[in-house]
Image 1 (cartoon, rainbow, N blue to C red):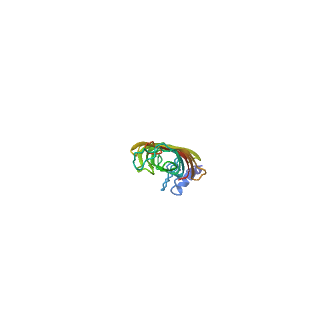
Image 2: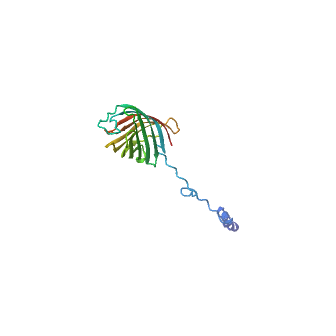
Image 3: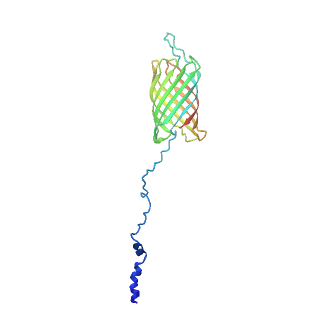
Length: 245
């Protein structure tokens, strides 16, 4: 009986805890992983932002058809004979546009409209535009500042002006998207007269496939109500091809 009582402490020391201690220093259990525990010397890149409705931008070029009216045929040499009224006529030409995204909320555009008119003194009329617009929250609506230059081939001077405008951008993420723009340049001066230049476009942008190819079908309008020159209005169909990038 005494012998059995003496063996009890020895048997208690031979348990699991005692066995782990008898082998030397105990190995600590690995720490549980969790938030803040996965630390590596390599940084993880953050995902890039998704491009807005126009992606990084687009370029377009195509055909312009126009009806021209209003104004007079300017005289190259001043005479006592009054200028002849401009006869209403048609015209053909081309246009080109380059639009690019500057940031998530700013974009810039360059546009060129060119018309060969088949009436009167058969002039060439063109309008060059450049603008920077702000897109609130990177959306489709935009407004901003532009510069326009109106020229006629038989005139010695161009009408130039800074102006303001609004745009409804095409959404190139969609297969079919409307677009529209209007810019007004209030102080275009030529032939001794100042008048405002209006430039408007509206239509549909089509992305036929998943590729970046674009098809544009729209309407173009240019107004310059200067009574000393012609035409005072140009308007017609636009058909063009382009690519997004």
